[in-house]
Amino acid sequence: MTPSDLRTLLDYHYWARDRVLDAAALLTPEQFTKDLGSSFTSVRDTLAHTYSAEWAWYSRWQGTSPTTMLPFDQFPDVASLRKVWTDHEAKMRAFVGAMDDQGLQRVHEYKTLNGQSGSSPFWQMLQHVVNHASYHRGQVTTMLRQLGAKPGKSMDMIGYYREKTVTD
Image (cartoon, rainbow, N blue to C red):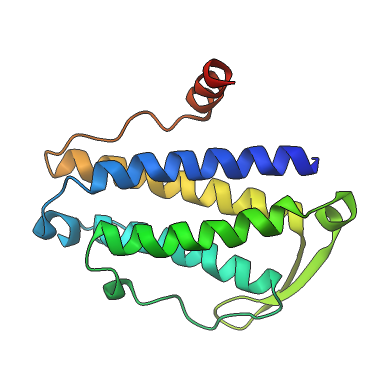
């Protein structure tokens, strides 16, 4: 894993995030918060959880271990979630953009939300953030279908690579 590899993963992550947020933005407020019985009940809660987890990992890299996730109800609509997540993206990109090989291998000590101690190299944690988000984007795609809404454009990584090749 190289710094360039991690920047590519982050580029993919935000490319896919934008696609799922674009699809969710077409929902009514009722659809956005409707309890669909999934692990995070609604489209809103699943997307807010995904952002909150990313925020928690970033906080750990900055030396602070949150003890709770962000409250999902602070995001009444996609626009409010998109705003904080896009602002957060700038911090993530700056942090990863300054990363060198030594920084990739740096082991970060942290506490999980339930207080258990953990430690992992940075590159593993960032891979986890991207993979975790992919998992939940898949759940949101299913929820969109359950609501009778159109799922987002393909969020497959190969689609990102194909699109990137065309635009580069």
